[in-house]
Length: 289
Image (cartoon, rainbow, N blue to C red):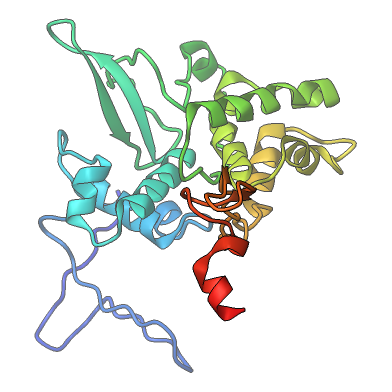
């Protein structure tokens, strides 16, 4: 059994303090927790790809009791970050396996959606209720578990459109489905297509044409060793995301074209907003002459 962390001894003694021999740097002043604490793995606390907000939300969610609400609205009330940033952080955690959503049938025949917090992505416990749909992460089958296979690694996070209209997402999905015609290795699963469609939609929303997005995803693909094409596409969608289109100021208003009217003085046709006299028959012109 590994030794327990020692508690602080004495008023001014810190047995767990680690002082560097020379120079500055971090010094730990630790004392043992005996209540109200949560164990967090360094794989989360020091994750090289997650943002600070995503790591903070994951720590907060793991500290909550079962049944607590962790929807975007509730988290927005709890934290100062807005709904957009919190939603993006939750997508990061979902993409890296720290969160997953499951539709589960409960007593009475109702179907509810549960958010599952994973303190070690990839290790799903068998005592979890069997989901109707595993969301973005597929559960590990017993046969695969018996063979020692690991669940598929989550894809890198992709950008999301500000206004995910159904027509925009459908265009993005059609683009991804058609990639296999250009390269058979780009045959994507339904799960991967659903994940990548948001990234493609974010490009299309920035006035990038379908052909330009297709070129960015398929150009200069490695000739060998393309093991995870969906992960490569996700990386390109995030790393090469173009900036938003430049702001275009409104142009001058179009010239107003009035209808033709007959002059009350000479009966000639002229354009004016209301009936009257043409320029040559106006009193002010004759007085000026």
